[in-house]
Length: 173
Ligand code: MG
Figure 1: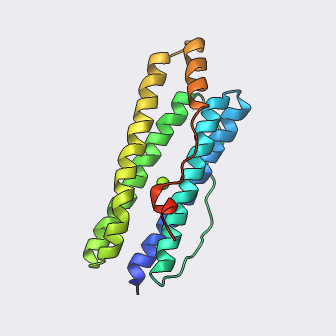
Figure 2 (figure 1 turned 90 degrees about the vertical axis):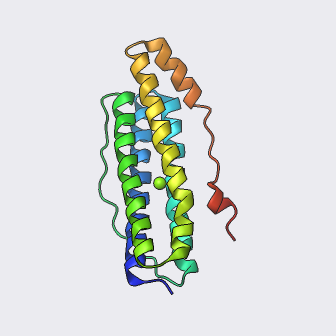
């Protein structure tokens, strides 16, 4: 059985993952409407990944005999001044998610919950990757500046991103 504190923290994390999903879906919708179809594709895939993160936590909570509580998802921004602004928001948001995962890990240590610590290991590595990817795209967009052709080429590149089911979900059950 899982401790009530860990259960509450996992439910909060599930909500945070759905909020992330909603944020990236909103970015996808915005950039699709703006004609940046590749960037929109990148964010639509990010949306799916975040949904998968929520699902991993939901499956885990259920496997521990816990109770999943789906809470309201707060409103997200709906427009950005540029792709650079969106990726800067992405990085800032991912840094917040990293802090949440770290707090969850600290709580699992405090509660002597070794299984939860183990489950969080994948997320800790995943957050390093998320931040690195956002930082990389910010750097590239800064280099691109107002060069339309360079932005078009990046958009084409991001159009080829495809969705891969995250490992903990692909191997589950
Ligand atoms: Mg996530």
